[in-house]
Image 1 (tube, one colour):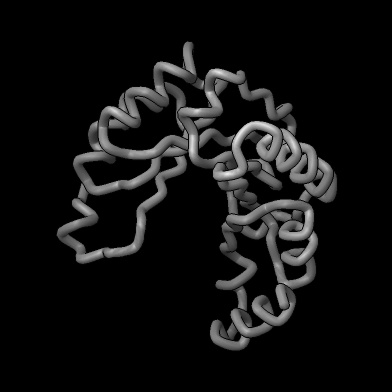
Image 2: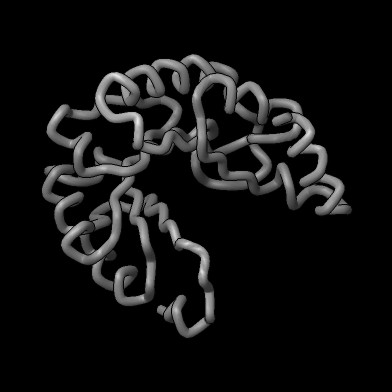
Length: 168
């Protein structure tokens, strides 16, 4: 694994692991310079222990949920995470359409976070485009991941300007 630090990357590096046994990747990504490691809690026996291992490696922890999964975060897990990431498409390939039911899931998750700790980021990943970015932010997401919503454009500057205008 190439070291991010040697690549002179200064932005925080967030790694989203969509694998079984994510605990096997904690140390390699920490050594490579990652700042946050996000995993799917159903892939581990004990999410609390996994979060503690991530923190012991010098990173912050995030948990991710696929569209067909309920966001079920134990009270004892909340103090150990700094991000909840909701997938608004099924992982596998880019260019998928946003699943509209994700808006209500964002709202409910935002309410749950705000009841416990408002400092946790709520991220959304999948199918985010100019036509829905405002909806996901208004529903409570404060961290968005856009792939084809940006990179399918012929003019990236123009696309980023359109996104910014949607958020004003």
